[in-house]
Length: 396
Image 1: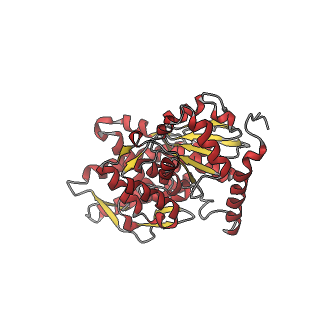
Image 2: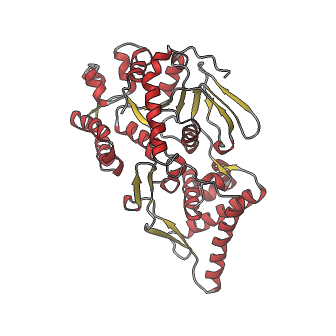
Image 3: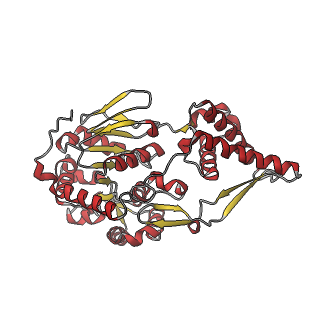
């Protein structure tokens, strides 16, 4: 190994190593790999055939003097989502669908836009080239109207064709960052060596293409916010806890950050922890990494890591650490609605400790940002809070 850890004594990692052993044991008893852990990407010929079948259906409809229709699984209702602890949120096999009709004033534009983007995807796959979602938007920004329209249509196409989005040769611009004991080679041959210093590396835009990943990290820490991530780098946390890896999605994670976390889990099976604000928004972000989202439930097998644990900031920590009430923030009505929504989700049933923490938040009607710990000392998070949590198993 080329890494030169400056971290704590070996004894520091005893509980972490025990946690990793239990994770590996649960994989073995579950048949060696988590269900869906070996999902294959669709080949170019399969993607082309799927698109051509859709176009053929349109031609057949027109030949019959019928208005063509796209039928897409409805991903906006919990009734269409099933939950499995080993996979997360995924589409039910018999879910309701919605129709995008070519003869309806409400949906004709959407129908045309789907057709246009399908044509662009066909060209990309056929020529073995890639484009970002932003590239597609700027081919005709006036027609599309907004980037969100393009993003939603690409997700709809991926769902309709039953093909992972990266098999469509469409990439996202990454916003996430990574630091720590990790190196890999990107698809174009670029060698990337992440460090434990104060500078992080951008998450690659083509996770599928990275190879030769090497690490001796004992754990991976997902940090909700960029400001907290940068503060930990400035405090030399990565070096002090070396060997480790840190990742941030800068809030709600983009697809590439989620894919990277999934790839690191599938490759190394190291413990993964989340550090989020003690508020409903932070919990929601943690749930996306762990169990996925309703919008991307059709691709759950490729994105979720159900072994992720909640390291902090726990609502119960606020009382335990005597954080003064004046540093806490009252829950807004939106916060309370979000919290109630999360408490009703299927995965909370199998997470009684999570439920207890959320009930503490609901009862206190207060939330806290990670920065609340600076009341104790400016570097309390990196010097005391996280090291103690990691050393003594303070996760749920």
